[in-house]
Every structure is written in structure tokens, then in C-alpha cells.
Image (cartoon, rainbow, N blue to C red; front, side, top):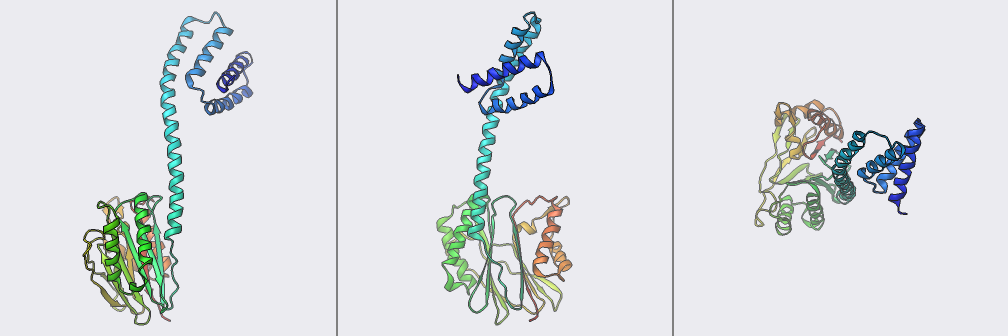
Amino acid sequence: MDNQQIMLGKYEDLLTKYLRDSNEQLLYKGQKLSRQSIENDITPEEIVAIHKSVLQNLYPDIPKKVVDSFDLLLEVMIGYGLVYLEHQLLRDQQEEIKSEMEIAANVQQTLLGTKVPTVKGLDIGAISIPARQMNGDYFHFVEDESGSISVAVADVIGKGIPAALCMSMIKYAMDSLPESRNRPSFVLENLNRVVEQNVDITMFITMVYGMFDAETNYFTYSSAGHEPGFHYSSKEEKFYDLNPSGLVLGVDKSMKYKEHSLRIEEGDMIILLSDGVTETRSDEGFIEREDIVQLVRKFNHLPAQEIVESIYKELVKLQDFQLKDDFTLIIFKRIGL
């Protein structure tokens, strides 16, 4: 006797007992039997058929219309059972995909994880929150022997696992270029060739790469179509857009990227971000860059890490706590020694 026959026999026995002596304990056993039936692939129509058979055996004089009603219920359950099985299959597939995505997200975090450096005279804050499990944004810090700090912020025009794979490629391509890190334009030009040769033509990557020289206090950067950041001048109490220049990575392998430099005085800030920050959307529409400026002013008295976290909380609140895009925000804040 197979499992299905055993389960149907159990249902027949349980139904017979319940019709003779109704009580809550038997109802509870029915709930347990329901779960066991699903585990043993008992279909709803099989349950209905055995239910009808038991009633006819116990009550031979049961009205014909009542018996016939079970034929209708049986047909309904056949269709229901097919849909239910499809639903179960899809749910199992979704659970499998979810599990794989969680593993991939953990691997991505391990592969692309970066530590915010501690630099004398510089306060650094960084936050990167994915809109989904996989992050299409990427940021990375490198500290050299002289104490200078290099930072990269990138955004893949695409989402999910393909974007994560692109970011892994970018990260390891950057690691292979240690001798040119002090030249942001060279970094972008080398990465551009890597992307052009290895990434599908439908997928592009924007990036800003900058280096803060701890000895001269100059910040030098190049941009490949990335969202322009800000420079805050403490002396003037004004915000200036960082100069955007250059095509996104992967379009033209011969592209040359310009470098821009500016001196960072005490109290000044460099603010780098992804378009997930500037494209925050409220009920009234997209926020303006001036809105971000006002938030930085609002929290300027805080340490850099608290500034980026506070801005994130304000902007995610505008979106009913549902990020529409990956969110990355980095602040370099020059402080007194």
C-alpha cells in the first residue's frame, strides 16, 4: 500500500469518526491530516471523492441531490488542484531563486566590501544601500603609503546579478592598476578599455574616481558620465557642482578623460553620490539638487558618517521607505588636526 492509499484510508477513518462523534480534537487531527496530504501529493479531488464515498456508505439514504453536489465539487477541485500544483511549483522555484540571490548578495558583499579608511585631518562618511538584494552601485577606498586616499564610485546601468558581476570585474580590474591610482584619468581610461572589451553593449557603467592628497590637501578626480557631486566651500559657505566630463565606460575604447583638481580647506567637503540620491522621488516629483544641498547644510554640524546616514533617512522617508534605485552617498570632510 502506497502513501496515497494510506492517507486516503486515514481520511476515511477520520471522517467516519467525526460524523459519529463530532469534537474539536478530531478537527485538529483533520488539520494535521491536511498538511500530511499535501506532503504526500494527495490532490483535492481525491479528498472530495473519498469524502463522497464515505457519506454514501454511512448514509445509504442520503438525498441524491446532495450526492450529485459532490460531482460538481469534484470538478471544481480538479481545476483548483491543477492551479494549486502550479502555484506550489512556482513558489518552490521562487524560494530557490530567493535563496540563490541571498547567497549571491552575500558573495557580492564579501567580494566588493571595502573599509572606510581613517585619515588624519579627514572625516569620511559612506553609505550604500541597494534597492533590491543585489547592489548596482559600488564604492571602493584605497589608501597608499603616503596616506593619500583614492575613492571610486560607480553605477551600473542595469540591475541584479549581471550588474553585480560587472562590479566584480571593475573591482579586480582596479586592483590590477596600483601604479596609476594617483592619476584618476589613467584609471578610467584603463577601466574603459576593460569594460568595452568584456561587457555587453547594452550595459554601461558610470564612474567617478578621485584621489585626496594628504600632503597637499588637493582632491583630483575624473568622471565617466557619473552623477556630478558637490564641493562645499566652508569659507564661502557655498556649494559648487563637481565638473562632469567624459563618456560612460564601455562606449569608446579610445576615450580620454580629463582631470580636475581643487584644494580642500578646513571645513570644506567633497560629496560624491549615485543617481539613486538625486533621483529620489516624492509625491510631488523628483527632488532637486538644491534639496540635497539643503540637507547637507542641515546636518553639516554632524560627523561625516552621521551626515550621510541622516540624509539617507530623510530621503527614504520621502519615498515611503521604498528605495526606487540603489543609493550611495560619500562625504569627505576636512577637519582640523
